[in-house]
Amino acid sequence: MGDRWRLEVDRGVCISSGFCANSAPEAFRLDTARQSHPVDDEIDASEVVLAAAETCPVEAILIQMAETGDPVFPD
Image (cartoon, rainbow, N blue to C red):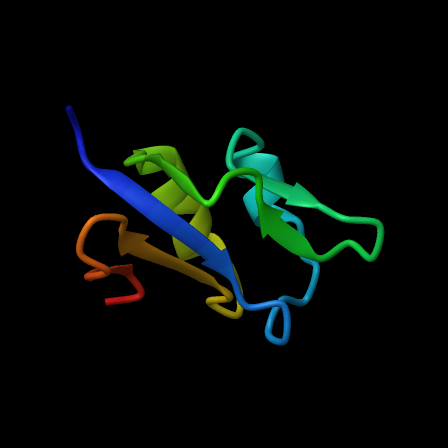
């Protein structure tokens, strides 16, 4: 079994750019206020999701190892 990640979006930081939802729609959705949120709390590790977090202009996306809580992004 591969690594699992826990996703979180800091809604106080999110500026509703939509980059995450456009680049990784399987992991992120925009709500009616155009704020991002994870589709699921935990996902399989994914380069697409990591790239979405890295392109967030305000680094509002936090990724941690699900089992240990160790940071994946930002590190």
